[in-house]
Image 1 (cartoon, helix red, strand yellow):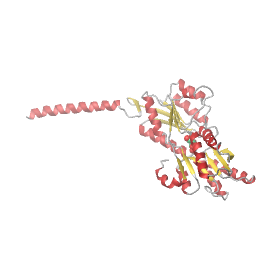
Image 2 (cartoon, helix red, strand yellow; image 1 turned 90 degrees about the vertical axis):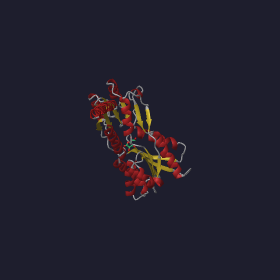
Image 3 (cartoon, helix red, strand yellow; image 1 turned 180 degrees about the vertical axis):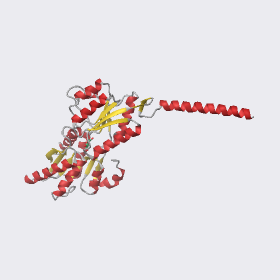
Image 4 (cartoon, helix red, strand yellow; image 1 turned 60 degrees about the vertical axis):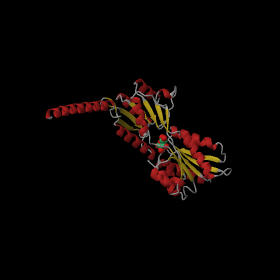
Length: 338
Ligand code: GZL
């Protein structure tokens, strides 16, 4: 009896060893996402625009945390809103032979040479957040996918919300516009979409328009200048359209310092949907924000993993977004993730 027990125990131990080895093998085949083959970590070079707004900070946080969670080796560069820094960073990623290059282009043009260099080095490029335009040729030949929002639609949504809110069919509505970074896709497209809708409302007029470079400080400075020149020209400002919430928040300070009530004397609509915008709406100082989600990290990780597994990607991955008027701000704020 004792001998047979020993034999059974031996067989069981052997079976256990095989099972564990098998599991280990499966483990090897299903190595953590961040490894493209046995033990080698995926490396991604990411060139970020900068840290100019709440939106950008949330975008960076989303990318860094998603990459960390996936075990991907992220080489991250902050360009401080300078294209030459982004080009330098991308060239350095090429030198380092990273597996994938991803970047959010600060402006649309000026990328031809560095994209050709990445293509020649056979390193796939992913565009996040903003698109590029080449001086010749089809940009789609130089990147595998572009993930981000439809900025033209965001501009349309801002104008459609405004027209619905103002309910003025004939009375003149004077609008001042704080544009985003000159030459950037969001600035160009948000203006295009907004003006496309206004074409059907002749009484709505953009009387002043200038870049605030997506920052609070510049937004405040330009709004001060708008208020000053409108007063000198005896013009009434009815509405502020800001291409992002940060410039709107800066402008709110300027409006208050001029002795006016933001959200009442001057109706304000902006874009992004950051927490600061919800707080301003709850305070009655902002009337609506159009959502533009910065939470691209998980989508970027999925795209990188698919690429390293040899899968092809959709050329365009569109982010789904909403419109948040002030009346829903208090209820919605607890749900906001950025
Ligand atoms: C939009 C993004 C813009 C945000 C700004 O996707 O590129 O840049 O609207 C940010 O807040 O600075």
